[in-house]
Image (cartoon, rainbow, N blue to C red; front, side, top):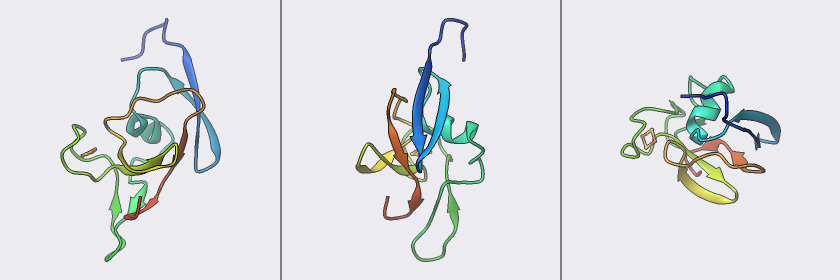
Length: 91
Ligand code: FES
């Protein structure tokens, strides 16, 4: 939950600048960006994946965060200057 004292954090998502309140997960930032339908597709069928369980169990929310592939974005807190890359199952 956002509080008036939460500072803003600036990150990029696929090269696009995004400002979100601190202490949010990357998945929450992606949802704020309008990626609620999903931010990656599966390798075999091309199905959309994004936030599903929200607790680090399903691995649907993967993305590359600061060059680290396969990060569960529902578990990673946003940080100033963070670089998030979305895409396919290879993330
Ligand atoms: S949404 Fe399930 S692991 Fe992140």
